[in-house]
Image (cartoon, rainbow, N blue to C red; front, side):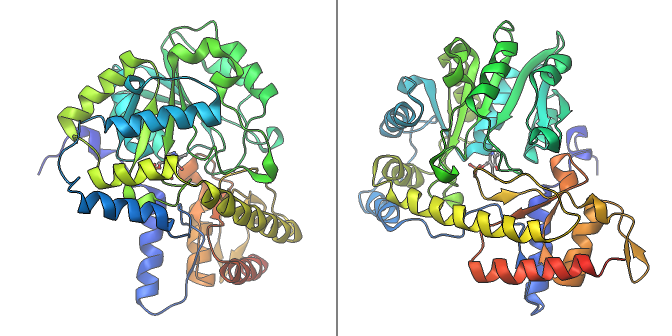
Length: 398
Ligand SMILES: Cc1ncc(COP(=O)(O)O)c(C=O)c1O
C-alpha cells in the first residue's frame, strides 16, 4: 500500500496517544490519575445544553451556510467587541469545527510551498504538523524559562526571513499557561508592524481563562496597525466546557476569511448545526459559568504550584491562565529506577505512567524535551493523589 508522502512523517497527536494509553490501563482496572487531559473537567452548562435541545426540537438539523449561521457570526462580533474592544463584521467571521479546524483552514489559504511560519516554543502540539501539512516550513523559536517561555522581540527579529509568511502566537499558552503583558505585546508588535507581508495567527482560545483578574490583551489590541493581517482564533471548547461540540472561529480580514470559507465549503461544509445554536447561547447567555470555572482553575493552579515548589529539582513558571503547568524535570535526567535511566521527557512520561500510574504529556511534544505538561483540569482529590504519586515517583529516581 502506498500512502501520500504527507502522512508518512505525520505523527499522531501526543496528547491523544498518552490519553489512549492511560485509558487502556484504566480498562485493566488500574487507577490512573490523568494529568494529560486537555479539556475542562466540568459539564457544559445547562442553559447551553438546553439551547441545543431546543434547536433539535425546532428542526434546526439541516445544512447551514458552510461558513456558519448568520446569528452566530453576529454574536461572535459582539463577543469580540465586548472582550477585545475590536470591531468586526459578520463577513469577517468563519465558524469551524473547533479552533483546530479554524487554524488549519487559515493555514491552508495562507501558505504556499516553502513559506515559513514562526512558532515560539513551547508550542501547542499541532502547530508544526499543521504547517507541514499545508506545505509550509515551521520555524521553531525556543523560548527560555528565564523569559517565562515568552518569545523576545530580538529572537523574533532573528527568526524572520523574506520567506516568513506568518507567526502563530498563543497567549495564554498551552502548555505553559503564560500570557504576554501589554509591554511584551507592544515590543513584539513593533517588530511585526513594518512587515506588512507577515500574517499573525493569534490563537486566543484561553483568553477568558485568566487568573486574579489580570488584564489580557493580544497583539492587535496592542497595535491596531496589525489588524489587517491578524486572524484571531477563538473557540467555545475551553471557555464554556464544550470540547466535544466542536465549534471554533477564525476572525480577521474578509479576504482571508472568504478564502478559508471556500476551503471549508469544499471539504467539511458547515460545522454541526445544533452545536452552532448551542454556541450562540454560550456567547450571548449568562457568563457566570465562565467566572466560576476560572475561579476553580485559579485555586487549583495555586495548589499545584505550591506542591511543585515543595519538590526539589523541579522548576516552572507559574501559570497565569489556561489550566496547564509545564515543569522542567530535566534535573532528574540521568537518574534511574530499577537500573533504567531516564534521559528525556518521553522516558519520564513512561516512567510516571508505569511506575506511579499518572499520565503526563512529554514536553518533546511541545518542543521542549526538558519538561512535562501537567493539566489541572482534575478534581482536588485527584490532584492531591496525583501529586503525592508524582512526588514519591521522583524521589524513587536515584
Ligand atoms: C492552544 C490551543 N489552540 C487550539 C486548540 C484547539 O481547540 P478546539 O479545536 O477544541 O477549539 C487547543 C486545544 O487543546 C489548544 O490548546
